[in-house]
Length: 297
Ligand SMILES: [Zn+2]
Image 1 (tube, rainbow, N blue to C red):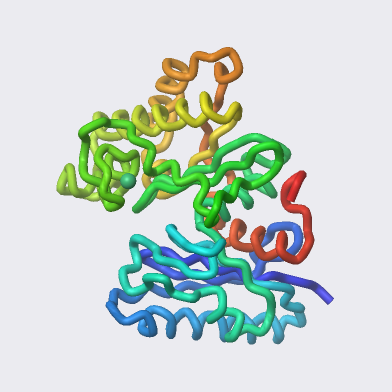
Image 2: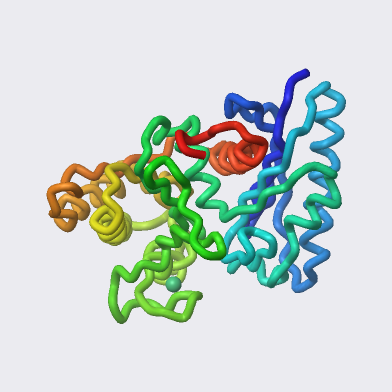
């Protein structure tokens, strides 16, 4: 019998589910817009419908469901027991893990979406085989997940890796977190739209270069702090900006990561493109099932 995990990606604009096999392939997927509502149940019910349809799909294909892995916007508490995604206002302390476990009857693990992405990139993406790297998402928001010595960093409540709140422009724009000049407040799609009056897809060369430079500034700090040699970046803003963004980021890293061990730190596009969030959530599910998705899992 083929085995799969149910992968769930929860974001501010859409919720997606997929069935991911033990090789990291997405066998089936579906999605729905995230409802804009103040009612937590109004956000939950379309997700519950997606989960039910995915379970039916797995059964009809003869695939056994091992676990559910969920990537969700941060922050969270209790290692994913409750979630309070900044971009889903209706969910504050929402018991997502328990709700999905009740709905599916298999073990469920919930983690930050950018940590999930890091796991996926280290499993079958651009960081496969690398034991020390960071994966970033530069999209509506900015997130990150860090793998050090072959392990995904967790922290007290599971929030390690929130690179979007490194301060790259002291005294800069006010961030949703309350601080000023956070990377997320300067280069996220939301920030760019607020600053320029147009979506990131319409950004000028100057905005693209500045976004790359500030992202590189954060990367350089992380490289200096953590002794890692590779940063892979996903997300619609970074990938949409493309080569000029990555060139500017790399140049800033070269200028600012000067310690001998940090020299040579590379900034690259993530490898899993649009399937990254589901592969990452799938990696969470497989890891909880005992499959070593990283070298030290
Ligand atoms: Zn912030």
